[in-house]
Length: 282
Image (cartoon, rainbow, N blue to C red; front, side, top):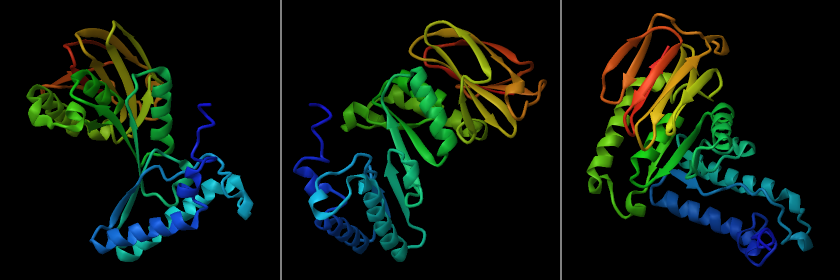
């Protein structure tokens, strides 16, 4: 019965259905109320409607048009916002490629462990929808923050389940601060570049060692990380797999403590402490 318990065929479909005139009026009324309070940006929680809605077939509505109707509703909200402020921004949760004409910025979050499927999804989303904010939900576990950095994700911080702040976990706060400084120093070659997963690189390492590739006009880059405990590994970059091969004699290792080390060649051995990360630009 899991898939049959659905908002799309039960009583709730009448309340939240994009076919419902009352629901559409409610959404536009709330939007106008927010505009009246001075808000000119809006986050729309999962605006898409993937499943067919059978709740209004008796009124001539085609179930498969539910997605289209949901987007027309978001489009109406968009027009209201832009009329109030031409620079307004609509942010939507979880990405829907078909809704990009009415959504300015997507936010997608994940709490799953790194798997080949997750790596593939991150690579696909970063390539096809580069304006998506990819967030990794982290409580106060430094190993998860380390993995988020390696993936090029933003941190969705939920310290103590959202009941605390970084001030309550000073050691974790220091780790986040160090990661932020490293990201700032390498952003153009990592988070602002194209995430390639493990394409174009060969990774050998012990448990806890991960490495992911990034591609930019300046050449390839690699983020190596040791999640949870000390780890070591080797990364070999196949320069011909990248549009820009980089500079064979001009590489740099950026470390978590703020130091940098010159590096040449296409192969690098890493020895990392627990939750340490390093960025290798080639």
